[in-house]
Image 1 (cartoon, rainbow, N blue to C red):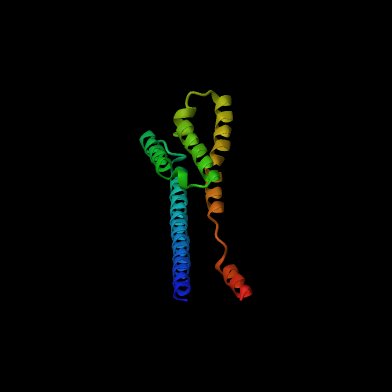
Image 2 (image 1 turned 90 degrees about the vertical axis):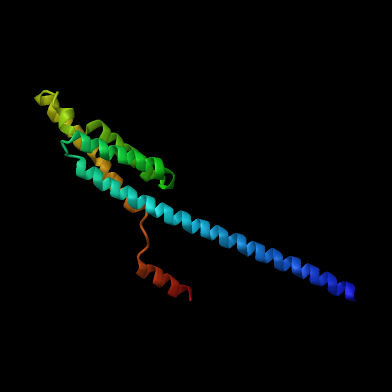
Length: 158
């Protein structure tokens, strides 16, 4: 009888340890997931702030200022690229390409004749849409449900 009680005690201890271990693993996984979500949100916020600086320098005539913003964009991508959603990452690279190729646009356009100038200016305007698209996609990818919907969903579950 004592042997059976001893075996049940050992088996119960092993089962208890196993459940405690699994609970620890799940809690740890949740903590890592939450940390990753926070880092991803931070990366998207910084990408949006960088996008706003792209807007600021789009019409700048200061080459040094443009290069400073371009370098900041490259540095941002080196540090945060892996945290960005795929769409944001792709659009950010396109926006950096636009800044590098066309800004300051007046330096780029000065060698064109009148007719070419107009068509190039139109093309630059079309290319500048990449920056607007970047700001839209960043907002879309981190969009949260309105709080009122979350409260309604919780109420329905009860």
